[in-house]
Length: 120
Image (cartoon, rainbow, N blue to C red; front, side):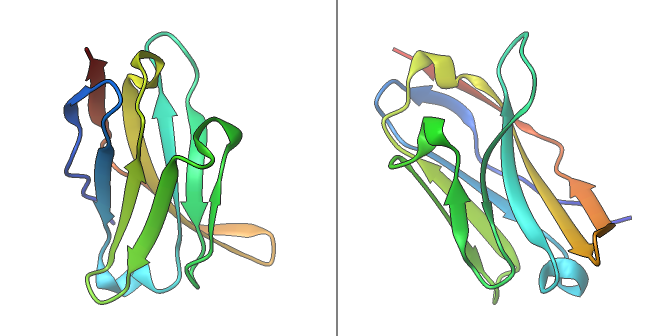
């Protein structure tokens, strides 16, 4: 069983930055895409950003220009930073590690999630 570890989160000030990280075992890290999701209270989980095996990031519109995700292959870790946080960014944040080969999902692991509360 592969476990993703997600430190970070907690109480964050409005306008402040959020920093999260997601660590995966070295045995899978090199072959996985890592994606970040969030689930606001009472709403569906939504994709925030992802980063390919080669380190190419992409961002969904709500965070475009405010988010940065990067991977550190030496540490088997991916980080996410979102700036200019708003109250509506309060959510449980998750990382997901997956691998698709020939259209088939080969790996699919989720972190335990971390609660982020944006407060003024």
